[in-house]
Image (spheres, rainbow, N blue to C red):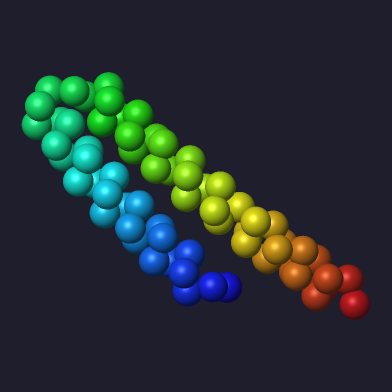
Length: 64
């Protein structure tokens, strides 16, 4: 697993939380929710290949 993905996830988390707080303070609740949802979907697209690789590795491990 690459270390870069951890830094990317942390950066997205920081940016989303900052945008979320700014949007909530200005009364834009729906846009704050959509920003959080977009951040979650972005991170999931980055993490899903690693999860698939983990399951393949586990499957190969137990098929011996």
